[in-house]
Image (cartoon, rainbow, N blue to C red; front, side):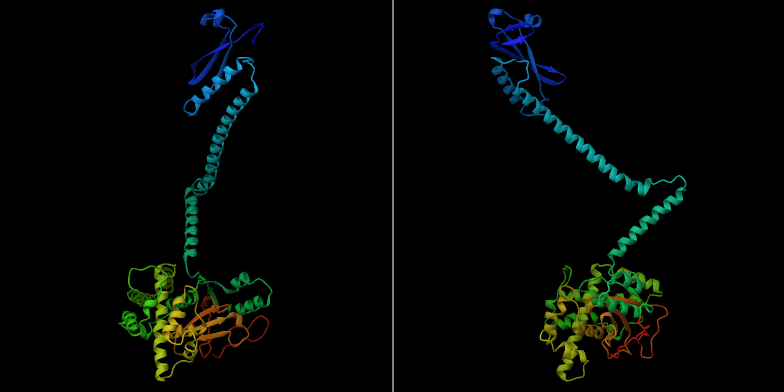
Amino acid sequence: MVVMGNCCMSTPSVNTEQTEFNGARILTIATSAGNNLGLNKKDTNRTQYCTRVSYLYHKESDNEGSTQGTQGQKADVKGRAAGKDACSPGPERSSESSHTMQKRAQKEAKSTHSDSHSSQQDLMKTPSAEDEKGDVDLYRGEEEIQKELQDKQQSKSAAVGEAQRSVSAAEDLQTYSEREWKGNTTKSLLIRKGYEAIASEFNLRRVRGDNYCALRATLFQVLSQSKQLPAWLHDSDISKWPKEIQSDQDSIKEWQFPFETSKSKVQHLEQCLELLKKRWQETVQCKSLEERERMCLQVFRGHDEEYELLEALKFLMLRTAIHLHSDMEKGSDVPEFCWLLFARDSSKCPKTFLTNHLRHVGFSGGLEQVEMCLLGYSLQQTMRVVRLYKCDTEEFITYYPNDHKKDWPPLCLLTEDDRHYNVLIPKKSFKFDAYGRPKWNPPSDGQPSITTRL
C-alpha cells in the first residue's frame, strides 16, 4: 500500500525508465494501480496515484559496475513495492545511500590529501630556492647579494672537496687533542700529555682511517717533503722489476688490487711503479710550497691513482724483502729488523710474507712495526714516529728503521695506538738537535721529556 497525501492505492506493478540529467544517468521507478484504473502518461502527470523515486548514479566513467548496480536497484525496488512505503528511506536504502556518500567522501579526502601533499612539497622547495635566489634584501645592492651567493657556493664546494680528501688540511695539535680526548681516564690524560709535548712544534694532518693509513701517511710525507729523488728511483729499468720478480719468485700471481683492471698483474704493477716515479719527480720539481700542496691534494683524493701509488709502495716492500732474505742466506750483514721479520712463523720467506701479510695490507690489516721498518728501508727514508701512548717512556719517539737516522731524510708521523697513523707538519720555528732529533717542550707537569735513543 502506498500512501500519498490523503489517497491510498494498491501498487501491484512497477514500471521503470531511465533519463539523463546533467550528464548523469537517472533511474525513474513509477508505480501504478493496475490496468482497471486506466492510467497513462498524462494521467501520471495529473494525478497522485503514482510516485516517482529517483536514484542518482555516478557517471559511467567512474564505476565499471554501474550496470550491475542498476539491476540490483530495480530488483530491490520491486520487492519493496509489495508492502513498503517507496518514499520512506528504509534501512537497506539508507545503507546504500550512506555507502555511496562514503565512497564519494573517500575520493574527496584522497584528492584533498594529494593537493595538500603537493602544496607541502612546494612549500618545502620554496625556502631553499629563496635562500639561493629569492632572499632579496631591499637595503643591499645587487652586486653584494650576488657576491654572497657565490661565497655560499664556494663554501659548499670546499666542504665537498674536503670530504673527498684522504689527507685533511693542517690543524692545531692542541685544539685537536682537546676536542678528541675530553675524558679524565688514565689513557686520555696520557694522550693529551703527549700532544702537549709536541703541540708547539707541529701541526696535524689527519689521514683517512683505513688499512692503508700507514702507507698513505708515509707517501704523503714523501711527496710533500722530498727535496730530491733517492738513488734507487733514478734506475731507468724500474718498470721491469715486477717481471723480474715474477720470473724468479713466481709470486706476483697472488697479488690483489683494490680495483678492477683489464691488465695482467705484472703489467699493472709496472704501471704503478711508473706512476710513482712520475709523481715523485713532479713534486721534487715544484718551485713553491703552494704548488707542491696543490699537487699533493690532486693525488690524495681517494681515486684509483692514489691506490696505484700505495700498491707501488707494497711492491717495493716485497722487492726489498726478497733482497734482504737473499743476503741473510748468503751470510751478509742485514738490518736487525730482518731477523724479526723472517723469524715469524707466518713469514719465514718472502713468499709466505706476501701470502700471509703483505697482500692483506689495505684489505683486512695494516702494517706492523717490523713492517714499518721494511717500508722505510724500501724508500730509503727514516720514519720518525711519535707514539703518544708511549709518552714518558723511551719509545715515545721511535725511528723506522733506526740505523740510517743521519743519512736518510726524516718523515714525521704520529700514532695513538700503533694502528692508525697521521701526519705531522713541522712549524716554521721547528728546531733539531745535533743528531737531527726534535727539541720537545716539557709537558705541563714539569717533568722533563724523554727523547728516544733508538
